[in-house]
Length: 217
Image (cartoon, rainbow, N blue to C red; front, top):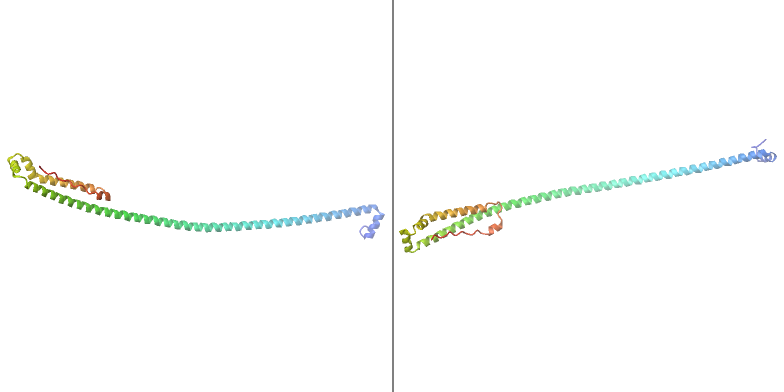
C-alpha cells in the first residue's frame, strides 16, 4: 500500500481502498488542525508581544512624564523656596532696622524732652523767685512809706499805749513774719514745680498768682 509516493498513487489507492481514503482524510484534517493551531498560536503570540511592547512603551512614557513632572515641581519648589527665603530674610532685616530706628528716635526724643523740660523748670523757678523777691521788696517799700506817712496823732496814740501791741508788731516783728511767710511760700511753690520730672507747657503757661501781704492796720 503506497500512501506517500505521489498524487497518482494516493488517488489510485483511494479509488481502490476506501480505508486508505479515510486515513488520508484523517491525516489531512489533522494537518489542517495543526496548521490552524499553529496560526492561532502565532497570532496569539504576536498579539501578546505587541501588547507587551505597547504596555512597556506606555509604562516608560508614564514613568518619564512622572519624572519630568517631579523634576519640574522640585525646581519650582526650589525656586519658590529660594525666593521665599530671600523675601523673608529681607523682611526680617527691614523690620529689625525699623524697630531699631524707631527705638533710637524715641530715646532721642525722650532725652531731648527731659533736658528741655528740666531747663524750663530751672528757668521758671529762678524767674518766679526773682519776681517774688521784687514784689516783696516793692510791697515792703510801699508799707514803709505808708507807715512813714501816717498822721502823728495815730503815732502818739500808739506811743501812749493804746496800740502798743500793733506798734510792736509793725515795728519789730512785722518784717520777720513777712520774711518767714515768703520763704515758706517760695519753698512750697518750688516743691510743687519740681515734683515731676517732666514739666508740661500748660503748667508753665499759667503763672502762679502773687500773694499780696496784708497791710497791718
